[in-house]
Length: 203
View (cartoon, helix red, strand yellow):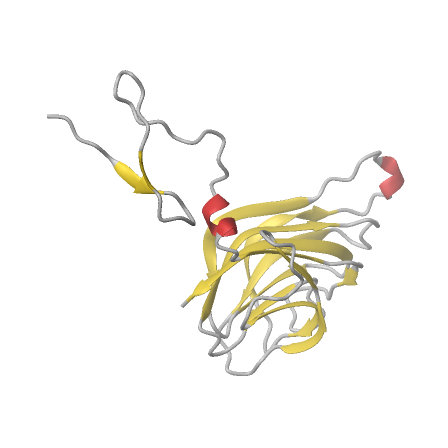
C-alpha cells in the first residue's frame, strides 16, 4: 500500500509533499542546528559581561559574576543552554569556577546593573519578559554549586600565548524556574568575563 505524506511550510498555509528518495527514504535537512527551532521562535538569548567582575571567595550572595534571575510570578521557565567564563589576569590563589543555582526565594534579586542581552534571532537588545540578566546583583541567599566549569591558576598570563575560555553546554537540561537564579561563582576571589546562552518559554 502506498501512502502520501504532506506538511505545511513554516510561516505559510502551503501544503506540500514531503520529499522521498527513489528508494522511498525521506529527505531530511542536513547540518541543521539542533536549536534552530527555538531560535526561529525568537525565544533564545545571549548575555555576556562587557567588563570583568571581581567575585567573592566561595559561594556568596554578593557580586556573582553574571546573574540570570527568573522573577517570582514571571510565568516563564529559563532553559540554560551554555555557561562560560574567561579570566585575563592570574588568580591570587587557584580558583575553582562553579555554575551555581540559587534556590527558590520570594525575595527578589537586587537588580543593580543590567547586563547586555541580545536576541539570537533578531539581535534586539530587549531582555525577555519576567527575566533579568544582571552584570551586578545581590542574591537573596548564597547559591549551591551544581557543575564545575573550570579552574583559574596563579601563573602569569604572559606564560601562555593563548587563553582558552572554559564552560559547559547544558543543552536546555537545566531549568531555572520562577524565583530561582543562576550565577557563576569562584572558590577564591578573582576576576572573570562570563557569558550565557539560554531559552525562555512559558511555564
